Every structure is written in C-alpha cells, then in structure tokens.
Length: 157
Image (cartoon, rainbow, N blue to C red; front, side, top):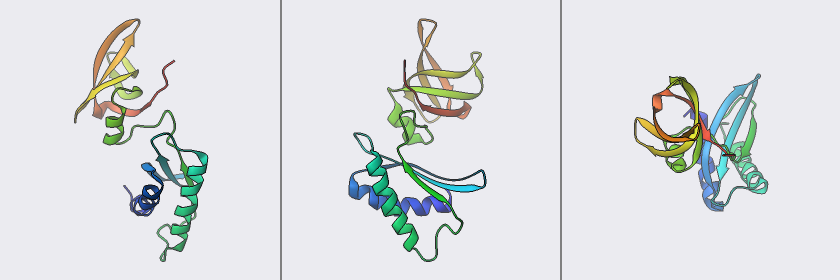
C-alpha cells in the first residue's frame, strides 16, 4: 500500500467501525491526468448510497483538517460499494469468496483457456480450485495464484 492509502486507512477505519461498516479496499490512482482516492466500503446487508455519503462527508472532514495535508495534490474522493462483481485483490477477498461464483482471467492459458468462471471450491497459499461447467461436464481445475491476472465475483446466469 502507498503512504496515502495507509494514511487514509488509519483515518477511515474508526469512521467505519463507528457505523458498523468495514473497509473492502482503498486505491489512489492517476487516471487521465486526475488523481482519484477511491474508498470501497461495505456492511453485512449491503452498503447504501446514504452510507457512502456519510463516510465521504466524515472522511473528507478529517482529511481537510489535517496539517500538513497528507495528499498535497488535487484529487477526487469517491466512496462506494465494491459492487456485486467486486474484484478479488487480496488474500482475504479470496477467503471470503470460497463457495461463491467467480470470474478469473489468466496471464497465460491453462488447458487452452485464459478465462474461467466457476465456484471457488478451495484455496491455499499457492493455488485456487474452481469447479467449472465445461460443456455440461462438471470439473475441478487447479489454477496457480501467480497465473491469475484478474479475479472478481461473478453473477451466474
């Protein structure tokens, strides 16, 4: 994590704890010449727009009152839900996704495929096991974590 995201994590955690929310992720990124501080929050029954606005207001107030400013450049603060198809970026995200349907993109093909969707059956330090439906045949496939380019929850149709 960057220095900015670490600082924001320390500031936002008490706010979230106070409201019964939890931090899913933080990112501080430069896109099209603009900086964005994105704070993804959630709660057990799902976060609302009002919840996000509440966190945004309280976090913004804390950030604005700090001297020196922990983020000297101009930026946009966005507080939102990680979404139904939330990215799986951290080990704890994968742990929470066990038993759920996920989408995985790979750096290089495994069994001639670079994209898989299936139920995350198990995981360990090095691999994940997905239960996939391959043309009507249910099969488990082992995927090394180092081969995963991107992973996210998926909606099964």
